[in-house]
Image (cartoon, rainbow, N blue to C red; front, side, top):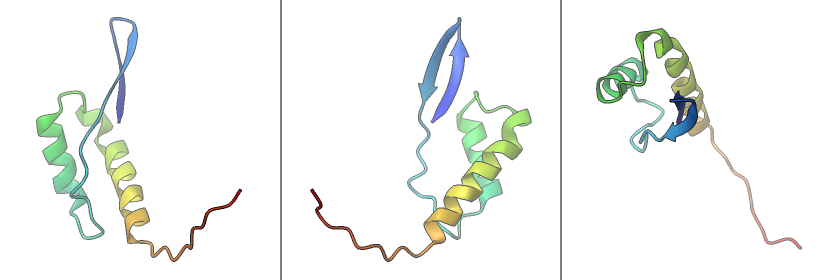
Length: 71
């Protein structure tokens, strides 16, 4: 989600990252997002890369959690 301010009003916009996987090229993905989304300026490129890398790390982790109903 992108959060930005327009005319003094706080707004949000979502970015689809459904194709993101542990082997995705982050730099290429960020370039693609920047071409499609004018809100992402060059000054924010490194921040967006870092956030996508953190998401990618989470996707790469094996989660062997067992969930169950608890009252």
